Length: 424
Image 1 (cartoon, rainbow, N blue to C red):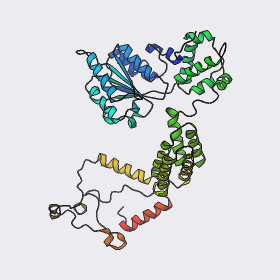
Image 2 (image 1 turned 30 degrees about the vertical axis):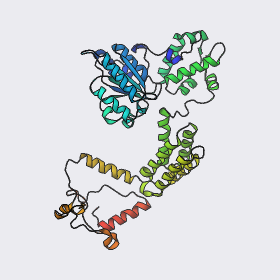
Image 3 (image 1 turned 135 degrees about the vertical axis):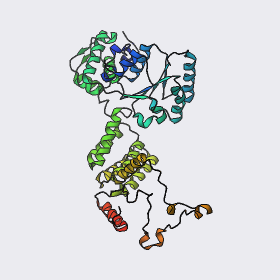
Image 4 (image 1 turned 90 degrees about the vertical axis):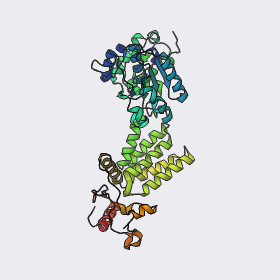
């Protein structure tokens, strides 16, 4: 029997009892069990790597509660599509009936205006939004929409989950049964799948299509059939975060060899070189900082160069900047200073007026009431410095910046000490 329907679609669960993995959500004490029992489902976002059952879980909730289920893909849907679906949802609602579900796959690809177009319908209960994303919603979903949604994290499948899925596929799928699939070893199969159910089932599809007669699953056959590790670097999935994280930490940890290795992993996997260049700019500011301000200049030059020349030549300035930043002295003092200052400002409930002498006085009235009076213009004093108070009342001597222990900032620390005579 031949079919054009992929194995992953043929085996998509039709009931919660067939769903594999995510016990923390769908198990006996899981929140989704309570949703089904109560029928009270808030808007929510499912965040997790590819192939762990986000779309399936959304469909199962709608099916179990027998509610209309609208779906949009953020890849090819615009504001008009969103408004059309919301209008249809309004027409299907009757007095005191639960709202239909609107499922948006890859919601992180929606821009701000597209996400804004959802706000009213979600807030008024016209639809119950279900979003699915592989990206951290804290960064990719606008705050007003995120505040109206619960976020549930889905995990990569364990080997035991993959084994259950494999057993079910071999035992239940008509095509696989016709092929007479024999399972001898699973190590390579599970390694290549990498916790992704869809990837595992796609591999089974590839093996069946590439094999005449009975299909034998063992490590050698799987490896030879796939020829290369399809999970080496998935720029749209979890590997994207693992490898960029390793790259950043290798540069921060002053290991140029590891940093170059992870750079090569990303480039070989098709990562956007502009994404890497942006990360290098952030690294230069956050982790090299005032220990070597030239790092930020070089990272910016790299960013501009990558935009101008593209691949494959862009690999060279990326490598040069990576090695320079990895071997540079490190300091996060500026990063820590702004973090501490923002934390203080966000918690400070006191209305602290700016001192009058450092306020601007663009009008005669402002000048008459003391704006700018007594201000000392630093360049008129020896060493271009005049001691005066810049902090609001009550914050005199408050320190946010602490020079780090490196040659450049030791010099900065000595200058601060000399100018301010121990005030900071």
